[in-house]
Length: 396
Ligand code: APR
Ligand code: PHB
Image: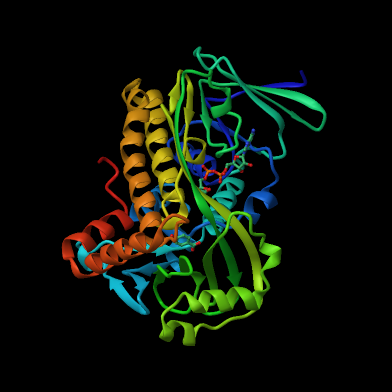
């Protein structure tokens, strides 16, 4: 054993969940060490959704990492649904009594969190190998990892499992203590990032007989587009021309015409999954973010759910240290899961409404079309979509 460190909270994973938790705890005066198996460059290389709920922006404010977000983030007051060769606007702002979302890439959020941590001189152990968690059923849990050929141990009060879907923390919970719920969708999203102006000021979600398409953006000069594809497809098989052609076919004529294309900067296929692990606490181990749940990206809820989890968790730990109260810790799992299941429902619903399923058939297509037509003509239905899209209140 080459070293033993001591901290209050050991955070496993330096994705958005782990980094935001670390920053919120730092602001609250709670000590933490973050252990990440990859390099900082690798973490920043992952491209993910970029729609932030107000709740997420508020947490980034609280963490003191929102200056660039307020400068460069794009406030969006609406989204567009495209079907039957027409676009229909959902006025999020009006339907929710003044709420909106902010378009700002997850990569940028991660960047800002990394910069803040570096500026404060707070520790992140990158490229930690063989990370393992121990004794979390006791008040003295430990984390072990290898780095540069030596073994290191962290003694702590709590372990936060922020290590994503494939992480070690959920996998270390004894079988039988965990119940998981899962749905895998029979298609993927082929995504392209391009240095071109977005086709529209607002996001376009399109239901088309050839499959779903989404027009999103990162800035006024950087666009992110997706088309539904088959799971056995490969990104390398898609030339840029083929991608732009397929996207155009799935949009209304006006959008197809005004779409500005260019070389892709990134092209990849992502599968779609719904997943929840219950509970989210095992003694002194707490799961947060993708370690505990996955949503398909259709509702853009992944990062927002992760932020809400670590918001609750940082509050729970802070109450424990400052107020000597276990209340937040004891309610953490239940409090998160109530909101998570509502976001799971919404993401599943958006996915079901907008995609072409292998078994959709003609009947299914007419039902989808009827639901979309109902949706854009019913204030009640649009309000339900809008209040979920901008994000439910923290306590639901
Ligand atoms: N030890 C240490 N770190 C690990 C381990 C391990 N055994 N396994 C995984 N990690 C790291 C990963 O390398 C990654 O950097 O944990 C981090 C988890 O980050 P994410 O997968 O981004 O998960 P999270 O921080 O919860 O962010 C959730 O990501 O997938 C999106 O839609 C999702 O936007 C949401 C966000
Ligand atoms: C994205 O910009 O990558 C994005 C936006 C909205 C979604 C999913 C992805 O629903």
